[in-house]
Image (cartoon, rainbow, N blue to C red; front, side, top):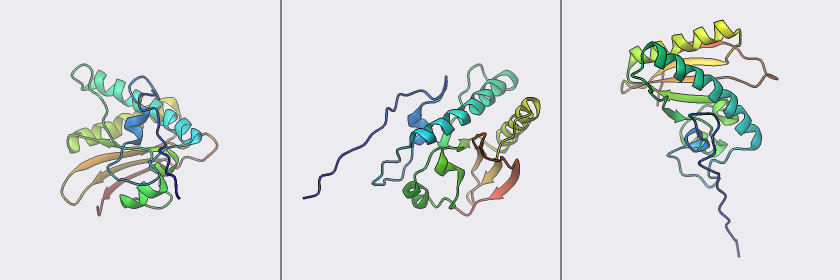
Amino acid sequence: MKIMTEVSINKQARLSEHFTLAEMCKTSAKTQDGNIPSHVHIENLKRLCGWLEMLRSEWNKRYGEGDDPIVINSGYRSEAVNKAVGGVSGSNHLTGCAADIRVAGIEQLVRYATILLDISDESQEDFDELLLERSPRGGYWLHFAVRPPSQENRRKVSLIQSLR
């Protein structure tokens, strides 16, 4: 007889002032593993959320209507979730180092990217990936990744037409 146990995460746990573990692990893919990050993945998500907090703050100073949130489409992905959603092998999402950020259109996409580049230049800290992505149906999102200090960040900036 096989006994199934359900593993869950504290969905209310805060990774930073405005980002929770639940929103950084949400997925529409239903997998057996539940998309539960390890402690190392959570530390990576916290580092990433530090950047996202700076993006949120600077966006609101420059363009926001007071307290606009940054909306995450995808953050941490387990191997099973990454496969289910068609993610690339070796994706920074697998380590909790990447987030796909929802944007209202190409203008907001470019402004978010500009803010993140400015933050990197001003802080002299590098990121790994800043990908301005577009789906075949015309939707846009920003993929942003920052690796742990023990790994080299590539400062890769690209415009990508996604196949998914």
